[in-house]
Image: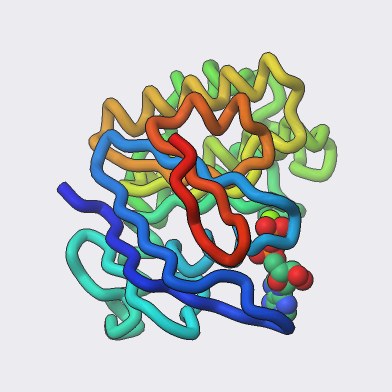
Length: 214
Ligand SMILES: Nc1ncnc2c1ncn2[C@@H]1O[C@H](COP(=O)(O)OP(=O)(O)O)[C@@H](O)[C@H]1O
Ligand SMILES: [Mg+2]
Protein backbone atom coordinates (compact mmCIF):
# COMPACT_ATOMS: atom_id res chain seq x y z
CA UNK A 1 0.00 0.00 0.00
CA UNK A 2 1.41 3.40 -1.00
CA UNK A 3 1.27 5.69 1.99
CA UNK A 4 2.95 8.65 0.33
CA UNK A 5 3.76 9.61 -3.24
CA UNK A 6 5.48 12.95 -3.74
CA UNK A 7 6.18 14.11 -7.29
CA UNK A 8 8.42 16.88 -8.63
CA UNK A 9 8.36 18.99 -5.49
CA UNK A 10 10.10 22.38 -5.56
CA UNK A 11 10.29 25.06 -2.91
CA UNK A 12 12.15 28.30 -2.27
CA UNK A 13 12.44 30.93 0.45
CA UNK A 14 15.22 33.46 -0.05
CA UNK A 15 16.88 30.99 -2.38
CA UNK A 16 15.79 27.84 -4.20
CA UNK A 17 15.95 25.01 -1.65
CA UNK A 18 15.21 22.03 -3.89
CA UNK A 19 13.62 21.08 -7.21
CA UNK A 20 12.15 17.99 -8.77
CA UNK A 21 12.02 15.99 -5.56
CA UNK A 22 10.06 12.74 -5.79
CA UNK A 23 9.68 10.14 -3.07
CA UNK A 24 7.49 7.11 -2.33
CA UNK A 25 6.74 5.50 1.00
CA UNK A 26 5.12 2.09 1.44
CA UNK A 27 3.72 0.54 4.58
CA UNK A 28 6.36 -1.03 6.85
CA UNK A 29 8.95 1.12 5.08
CA UNK A 30 11.37 3.59 6.67
CA UNK A 31 13.14 6.37 4.81
CA UNK A 32 15.85 8.66 6.18
CA UNK A 33 16.67 12.09 4.78
CA UNK A 34 20.08 13.50 5.58
CA UNK A 35 21.78 16.70 4.42
CA UNK A 36 23.59 19.79 5.64
CA UNK A 37 21.95 22.28 7.96
CA UNK A 38 19.98 24.73 5.82
CA UNK A 39 19.60 22.31 2.89
CA UNK A 40 15.83 22.26 3.41
CA UNK A 41 15.20 18.96 5.23
CA UNK A 42 12.66 20.40 7.67
CA UNK A 43 10.93 22.30 4.85
CA UNK A 44 10.63 19.11 2.81
CA UNK A 45 9.22 17.22 5.79
CA UNK A 46 6.67 20.02 6.32
CA UNK A 47 5.60 19.66 2.69
CA UNK A 48 5.30 15.84 2.93
CA UNK A 49 3.27 16.17 6.13
CA UNK A 50 0.80 18.73 4.63
CA UNK A 51 1.92 21.60 6.86
CA UNK A 52 3.36 23.55 3.94
CA UNK A 53 2.14 23.98 0.38
CA UNK A 54 5.01 23.49 -2.12
CA UNK A 55 5.80 25.96 -4.92
CA UNK A 56 5.52 23.08 -7.37
CA UNK A 57 4.61 19.41 -7.38
CA UNK A 58 2.08 17.17 -5.72
CA UNK A 59 1.85 15.06 -2.59
CA UNK A 60 -0.50 12.11 -2.40
CA UNK A 61 -1.23 10.54 0.98
CA UNK A 62 -3.05 7.19 0.97
CA UNK A 63 -3.74 7.73 -2.74
CA UNK A 64 -5.27 11.19 -2.44
CA UNK A 65 -3.72 14.46 -3.57
CA UNK A 66 -3.47 16.61 -0.44
CA UNK A 67 -2.60 19.76 -2.39
CA UNK A 68 -6.23 19.73 -3.63
CA UNK A 69 -7.96 18.33 -0.58
CA UNK A 70 -10.83 20.08 1.24
CA UNK A 71 -9.67 21.67 4.55
CA UNK A 72 -11.99 19.52 6.64
CA UNK A 73 -10.65 16.27 5.17
CA UNK A 74 -7.10 17.54 5.56
CA UNK A 75 -7.68 18.28 9.26
CA UNK A 76 -9.08 14.79 9.71
CA UNK A 77 -6.04 13.17 8.07
CA UNK A 78 -3.64 15.29 10.12
CA UNK A 79 -5.42 14.43 13.32
CA UNK A 80 -5.83 10.70 12.77
CA UNK A 81 -3.28 9.45 10.29
CA UNK A 82 -0.19 11.61 10.57
CA UNK A 83 2.20 11.60 13.49
CA UNK A 84 4.59 14.50 13.40
CA UNK A 85 7.54 14.66 15.78
CA UNK A 86 8.93 18.17 15.55
CA UNK A 87 12.51 19.22 16.08
CA UNK A 88 11.37 21.37 18.99
CA UNK A 89 8.60 19.50 20.77
CA UNK A 90 5.36 21.37 21.13
CA UNK A 91 4.02 19.92 24.36
CA UNK A 92 1.42 21.88 26.36
CA UNK A 93 3.64 23.47 28.96
CA UNK A 94 1.12 24.04 31.76
CA UNK A 95 0.12 20.37 31.81
CA UNK A 96 1.69 17.18 33.06
CA UNK A 97 3.26 14.70 30.63
CA UNK A 98 0.28 12.40 31.18
CA UNK A 99 -2.25 15.14 30.39
CA UNK A 100 -0.42 15.77 27.13
CA UNK A 101 -0.89 12.11 26.22
CA UNK A 102 -4.55 12.25 27.27
CA UNK A 103 -5.22 15.02 24.75
CA UNK A 104 -3.82 12.87 21.93
CA UNK A 105 -5.68 9.83 23.24
CA UNK A 106 -9.03 11.68 23.34
CA UNK A 107 -8.61 13.25 19.90
CA UNK A 108 -7.66 9.97 18.22
CA UNK A 109 -9.93 7.78 20.39
CA UNK A 110 -6.99 5.49 21.11
CA UNK A 111 -5.94 4.33 24.58
CA UNK A 112 -2.66 5.35 26.18
CA UNK A 113 -0.31 2.42 25.76
CA UNK A 114 1.44 1.54 29.01
CA UNK A 115 4.01 -0.53 27.17
CA UNK A 116 5.03 2.55 25.19
CA UNK A 117 5.67 4.53 28.38
CA UNK A 118 7.72 1.65 29.72
CA UNK A 119 9.84 1.37 26.59
CA UNK A 120 10.44 5.12 26.44
CA UNK A 121 11.35 5.06 30.13
CA UNK A 122 8.93 7.86 31.05
CA UNK A 123 6.69 6.00 33.51
CA UNK A 124 8.44 7.52 36.49
CA UNK A 125 8.04 11.12 35.39
CA UNK A 126 4.64 10.87 33.67
CA UNK A 127 2.72 12.88 36.29
CA UNK A 128 5.24 15.70 36.43
CA UNK A 129 4.68 19.05 34.75
CA UNK A 130 6.27 19.29 31.31
CA UNK A 131 8.37 22.26 32.49
CA UNK A 132 9.93 20.09 35.22
CA UNK A 133 11.21 17.50 32.76
CA UNK A 134 14.63 17.40 31.11
CA UNK A 135 14.94 18.07 27.38
CA UNK A 136 15.39 14.35 26.72
CA UNK A 137 12.34 13.42 28.80
CA UNK A 138 10.24 16.03 26.99
CA UNK A 139 11.36 14.64 23.67
CA UNK A 140 10.36 11.11 24.70
CA UNK A 141 6.97 12.36 25.93
CA UNK A 142 6.40 14.04 22.57
CA UNK A 143 7.25 10.76 20.81
CA UNK A 144 4.82 8.91 23.11
CA UNK A 145 2.16 11.50 22.34
CA UNK A 146 2.59 11.05 18.60
CA UNK A 147 2.54 7.23 18.74
CA UNK A 148 -0.51 7.24 21.06
CA UNK A 149 -2.51 8.51 18.06
CA UNK A 150 -1.58 5.32 16.14
CA UNK A 151 -0.63 7.26 12.99
CA UNK A 152 -0.20 5.56 9.61
CA UNK A 153 2.81 7.72 8.82
CA UNK A 154 5.38 8.97 11.31
CA UNK A 155 7.26 12.10 10.26
CA UNK A 156 10.17 12.71 12.58
CA UNK A 157 12.50 15.72 12.44
CA UNK A 158 15.67 15.04 14.44
CA UNK A 159 13.59 13.10 17.01
CA UNK A 160 16.64 11.98 18.93
CA UNK A 161 18.48 15.32 18.97
CA UNK A 162 18.28 15.69 22.76
CA UNK A 163 19.05 12.07 23.57
CA UNK A 164 22.25 10.23 24.37
CA UNK A 165 23.36 7.63 21.84
CA UNK A 166 22.00 4.62 23.70
CA UNK A 167 18.57 6.20 24.23
CA UNK A 168 18.53 7.37 20.60
CA UNK A 169 18.88 3.75 19.48
CA UNK A 170 16.16 2.62 21.90
CA UNK A 171 13.84 5.24 20.39
CA UNK A 172 14.72 4.10 16.87
CA UNK A 173 13.98 0.46 17.87
CA UNK A 174 10.60 1.63 19.05
CA UNK A 175 9.84 3.44 15.78
CA UNK A 176 10.80 0.36 13.73
CA UNK A 177 8.72 -1.90 15.95
CA UNK A 178 5.79 0.53 15.64
CA UNK A 179 5.77 0.71 11.84
CA UNK A 180 6.12 -3.06 11.54
CA UNK A 181 3.29 -3.79 13.96
CA UNK A 182 0.87 -1.16 12.64
CA UNK A 183 1.62 -1.32 8.88
CA UNK A 184 2.76 2.26 9.14
CA UNK A 185 5.67 4.07 7.45
CA UNK A 186 8.29 6.50 8.67
CA UNK A 187 10.20 9.42 7.21
CA UNK A 188 13.07 10.41 9.44
CA UNK A 189 15.12 13.58 9.09
CA UNK A 190 18.46 13.40 10.83
CA UNK A 191 22.05 14.60 10.56
CA UNK A 192 23.18 11.36 12.24
CA UNK A 193 24.40 9.02 9.50
CA UNK A 194 24.47 6.02 11.82
CA UNK A 195 20.79 6.38 12.75
CA UNK A 196 19.89 7.13 9.13
CA UNK A 197 21.45 3.89 7.94
CA UNK A 198 19.20 1.88 10.21
CA UNK A 199 16.36 2.91 7.85
CA UNK A 200 15.52 0.86 4.79
CA UNK A 201 16.35 3.72 2.40
CA UNK A 202 18.57 6.75 2.82
CA UNK A 203 18.36 9.93 0.75
CA UNK A 204 20.47 13.05 0.85
CA UNK A 205 19.43 16.63 0.09
CA UNK A 206 22.36 18.05 -1.81
CA UNK A 207 22.75 20.59 -4.63
CA UNK A 208 18.98 21.20 -4.56
CA UNK A 209 18.24 17.55 -5.35
CA UNK A 210 17.17 14.54 -3.30
CA UNK A 211 19.74 11.87 -4.10
CA UNK A 212 19.43 8.21 -3.21
CA UNK A 213 22.33 7.11 -0.97
CA UNK A 214 21.24 3.56 -0.19
N1 LIG B 1 9.29 29.95 7.19
C1 LIG B 1 10.43 30.34 6.62
N2 LIG B 1 10.57 31.57 6.11
C2 LIG B 1 11.73 31.96 5.49
N3 LIG B 1 12.80 31.16 5.37
C3 LIG B 1 12.74 29.93 5.87
C4 LIG B 1 11.54 29.44 6.53
N4 LIG B 1 11.76 28.16 6.92
C5 LIG B 1 13.02 27.87 6.55
N5 LIG B 1 13.60 28.91 5.91
C6 LIG B 1 14.96 28.92 5.36
O1 LIG B 1 15.11 27.84 4.47
C7 LIG B 1 16.39 27.24 4.60
C8 LIG B 1 16.24 25.76 4.88
O2 LIG B 1 15.69 25.57 6.18
P1 LIG B 1 15.31 24.15 6.77
O3 LIG B 1 14.30 23.52 5.91
O4 LIG B 1 14.95 24.36 8.20
O5 LIG B 1 16.70 23.37 6.61
P2 LIG B 1 17.30 22.13 7.45
O6 LIG B 1 16.18 21.50 8.20
O7 LIG B 1 17.91 21.24 6.40
O8 LIG B 1 18.35 22.70 8.33
C9 LIG B 1 17.11 28.04 5.69
O9 LIG B 1 17.94 28.98 5.06
C10 LIG B 1 15.99 28.71 6.44
O10 LIG B 1 16.40 29.93 6.98
MG1 LIG C 1 15.83 21.18 10.21
